[in-house]
Image (tube, rainbow, N blue to C red; front, side, top):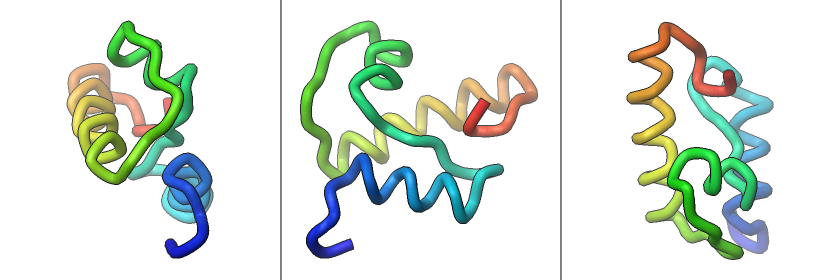
Amino acid sequence: MPGVGVPVASAVLALTEPLEYGIIDVRAWAQVFGTRKKSFDDRDYARHMTRIWDLAAELSWRAQQ
């Protein structure tokens, strides 16, 4: 989305498709990867969601859970 950062765009996706998408932010990244990160690009979001989808499948959860 032009003019919108990845974290905000991820929030829009999570609101419109809550079963499929989660939000990326500094806290979510730290929980998933155990490292700190302050900014995100589209590759980070793809990496984040790939891990989230794997975890959701493993735990029988939705992506936002």
